[in-house]
Image (cartoon, rainbow, N blue to C red):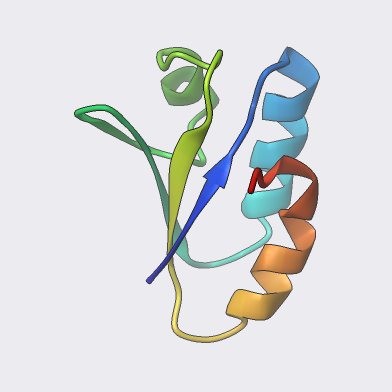
Length: 77
């Protein structure tokens, strides 16, 4: 599992983020405080506080570098 911080501070970013991760057959979880939601759920994402960065857990053993490359626009250091 790999964890990165991402920022989804606009509606367009949320839509494109979900479109990007649904291409992969792996599980993604978003963690904000004590809430953990499925990152492929647009409704779930909008239930979080999107004003601050959110942790993204990528449950993948393979292709992690490819996934990270596609998610670069959302990742905050």
